[in-house]
Length: 270
DNA sequence: AAGCAGGGAGAGA
DNA sequence: TCTCTCCCTGCT
Image 1 (cartoon, rainbow, N blue to C red):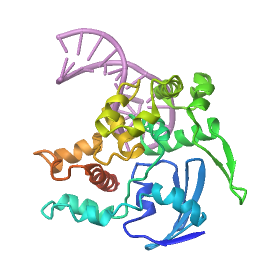
Image 2 (cartoon, rainbow, N blue to C red):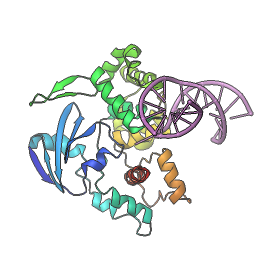
Image 3 (tube, rainbow, N blue to C red):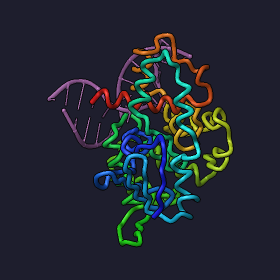
Image 4 (cartoon, chains in turn cyan, red, blue):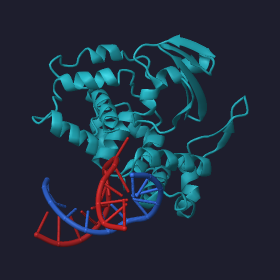
């Protein structure tokens, strides 16, 4: 058990922000997530958080995963005081952070996300993990499933993938797994590359277009300058930024602002 | 119950 | 380049 007081963090907002699909509410104020083969529960009471892990694990894995080294308060203060829409979006999604998630998991996740909705993405990812991933148990005996490595997905093949209800996306996922194994999709190179290079490489991969590549850059490589434009963001830009989004003003971190806007739009729709 | 939902590939212009 | 259709599936 590790406890911390943390500003600019809200678990519910992150879980619903569409950047991660394996973070679920366990009970009041408690969320559970699986990442890097490990399972974590977090309880939030205001700005006080308790994590179901040791101080060591917190420092080595979760602090970084939750992007706690980044000052989101400072970023929010950079928002144009004249931009009432963006201020409102930030006010509503004040506790959003960009999680530093695993690259391979993000590649598969956002391949699944195309032309798809959040609840179905969640189900697909969970089914993929429980079918092809590795079954693990916490010290308390709670079962969880790790995200399948490329080897496991390639080994499963279309025979298994086609039974998971992924639709036409199954062949993209198998293709990506095979590409990692044969070296044509080089994860280590992507991790070292800058945003432009990573994006250019990603769109070469079958099933990855501009939007999905941007999501992978933002959520899997922490290139916070990446600004994915999906149908929601497109709609937002048309409604609130007819002259175009001020990318110059927010150069280098526009992706974080995109996340506030996206979250705001999801809530407005409901 | 036709049409849509966090897109992309492939074809044709 | 740009536009158009089709793609799996589940939900409304």
